[in-house]
Image (cartoon, rainbow, N blue to C red; front, side, top):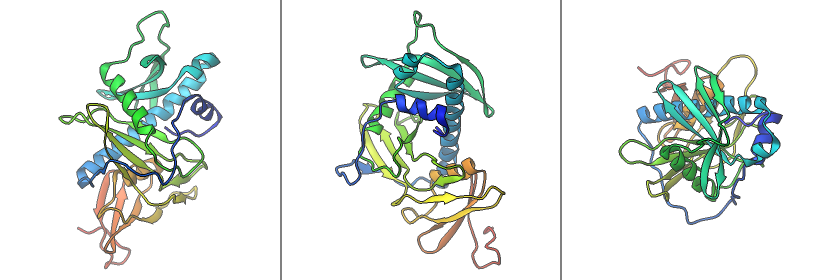
Amino acid sequence: MRLFGPGALALAATILIPSAQAGETGRPSTIPTADLATVAARGAEIYAFDQAAWHSTDALTARKLPIDVMHAIRGWVVEPAGDVLTVTYYGLSGTTPYAIYVAEYRDGRIVADRVPDATGDRSLSAQAVRMAAAHDVAMAQPFGACVERPFNTVTLPPRPGSGVIPVYLLTPMLKWNAYPVGGHHEVDIGADGTVLATRDFSKGCMVAELPDKPMLFPAVSHLLDPQPTEIHVYLSLWSRRPMIVGTPDNVLWNVDGTKVAKMDVKKAGATRKK
């Protein structure tokens, strides 16, 4: 979710975030690099879910709900249904989540929203309950933060077959057109609610500042994988600009949204390799 602006920042302040300290050890195994098709699809999924959370946060803020209701919000989950992403902001009754605000996102905008009746059924789906629990487990992991703000989070639905829930912890944007390239992480939560594996997508906290006029995203190096990751796809979609990614062995890649291709550096202008 793009926590940018006073309304969104006020909402963020009401959500309890477990603390994380840099340098802690004892993490589970590392998530392996995915193939390019999976990278492209996952990056697009992260972007879509992030956009749904961002737009629904604005819609929630516009509702001007009572402050005690806003303070009761402990998180949100995004669930797909056809071409609609349903975002549910929830509170906790003991350890049981209940819906406080629900918005439906499609084609770049909120198409419907509602505040469930406090006297009616406000239960979450079984999937949403699992996703909410996975979010909390992921947020408790000891990742160091690049900025003094909570991570933006994207919790994806259980993967078909394995039931694994991927949770992405994303460093938020603090300045307009200054895109955080570093400081992003993934935590995979198993069907039993425990952490299966984690990964860091960078070793540093690089921020790429883009000019207002359209142009390429600044070239970035990525030495942790032999190819770009879903985070590069996400950043390209978010900024609406292609980016060049350098990987080990002096390989260059062009990431243009979900299109990821090696570049031929021998040709003038480093055109795409055919």
